[in-house]
Image (cartoon, rainbow, N blue to C red; front, side, top):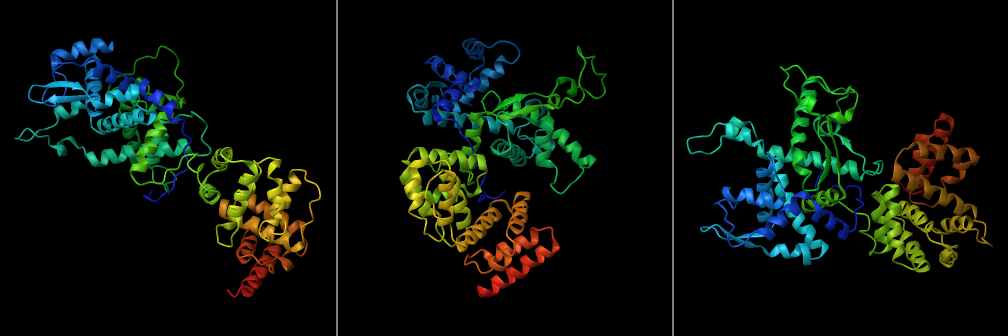
Length: 479
């Protein structure tokens, strides 16, 4: 995916709701508590971490106990320092003070809170790309006491790139049109989405082994990423992670071997969706969100929703309409739908879909364009659907122009879809002699539409008629 790729639009929750979610995440809430606890007597080491004798006290402040208490406390403290909630004021003396950003968590705007959370997320993502600390300690170090990364078999850039790829695919699955709300993704499928080549029908044993290894890495990484609120994660079943040389323990209850959830399930939280989109924008991707076009003109709406799926386009258009009075909105949409460029048919299709959401107050705007060559057919359809009276019958020339325009829009929106194939068959069936007239239609897309009809129609005789008509249309246009 290149930096210029346009991703499907994300449906984000309001900033205030996201900020509340950020403040309630275990990691940021712990970091904030430690920042408020820290005072003149708090001491840190040369790396900014709490000195050993204060870790236990800080853990009590957080209400943490058990084997992981020290590690969890240290992580929360590091987040507090990295996000500016705590500031090291004297490195030599190891003293700290409340950072300037601590006040943002209580007195700042939702955007301020989310900015602090994004800084915390970056720290955790960096941690997630680092191998297990035990492996680091066991790795061979050179004579200067520096780690020999080749002995560890760890490539920091490759590891970060792999995690970014996994999170990018999780983002795509989350914003996709066909994704059910809150639907978790099985860990094997997510790992395979990055490692299995698209042209590989059946993964090789080598690739399957890579997927299995990646699942174990991702299990560790998602366990780290859950406390910062990026994901909701159901870990891999511990029974699957036992030593291969050991006999597996007898399960307390019967195990369903086909239960994919045993291999880990993950989904982006609404806060995680916000965070990954922010990172994608920072990296130069076009990552739209529903509502981005609400304050822009109708031309931006119709062009911008051209790449949206139906549900996202509907939601974006609804937001756009709520900011405008119906009659003015209808006039603006119709004006933006005009044009003879390649994108115009799809703009008119989206205009028609947008006008379907406008009430009867829009009727005067539609009547104003009844004689317009490009909009008259569209206007008649809208008026008829809304039960308007005294709608003049369209001339034959307008009917054929609207037909060509509609098929051109469907071609642009869907390509050679089954729906378009059915539309083409219906047109040829309903209008005997359709092609004798269609090639004469004065529309920039006439030849392309007739060629597509010849390509899509299953009846060889009718397909040949369509291709002949396309040749005539192209000759008439001088092409």
